[in-house]
Structure formats: structure tokens, C-alpha cells
Amino acid sequence: MANSKRDLFQKRRLRVRNKLRSTNSGRARLSVHRSNKNISVQLIDDVKGVTLAAASSMEKDLGVVGKNTVEAAQKVGAAIAERAKKAGVEEAYFDRGGFLFHGRVKALADAAREGGLKL
Image 1 (cartoon, one colour):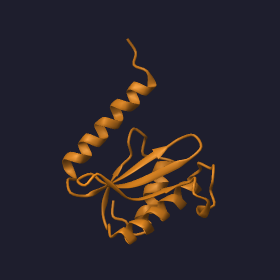
Image 2: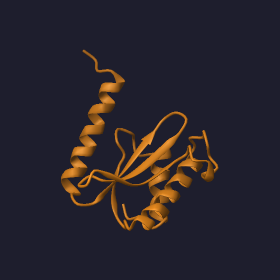
Image 3: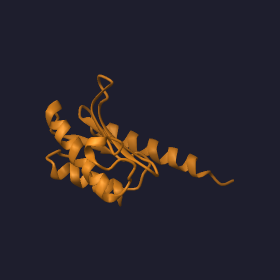
């Protein structure tokens, strides 16, 4: 019996998150969500259960509303790096969820690294 795409995505997401949690305890988590139209990212403190910073391509001040391109992902990555510095976070671990690490997700991670966030 074949698994649906959604089931495979959920399995991949949980596998990635559980492995990262076991190896990076005590650090903030940079969680990415990519849809067909937008890309968003959150910096989460799992110990306290709070979001420290967030950025999305839906924000008007980034100038990429409704676009989900590599350029939009780079702008969102730069924005989250800047907001993480303001929140006092220097390093985090990158939680790609069930998304493959290439294209827009990779561009976001690279832009966050260039902005000074240690992933």
C-alpha cells in the first residue's frame, strides 16, 4: 500500500525535527514553512515555548508580498538574521521541516548565515 504525499511529508518532518532536537538541545530553532505563494520563518525557543522572532514574504516592508522566489527567500533570510540579533540570539539550529534543503529553503538559510546568524 502506497503512502500519500502528505504522509511521507509528515514522516520526513518528524524525523528531521526529532534528530535535531536530540543533538541541539538548549539552542533556538529556526523553523521554515514554504507554501506555493509565500515563505515564512520563525525563531523559536522550545524550552520556554515562545517565538523570539519571525519574518515572512507576506510583510509589506520586505517588498516581496505574494512572491515565493529565491530572491524573496533571501530577503526573508536577511530579515530574520537582523531580528535574531535584536532578540539576542547568535546561534540556532535550522529546522527545514519536511522540505528538501535546496532552492528557496537553501537560499533562506544562506542569507541568514550571511546576516550573521550561526546555523
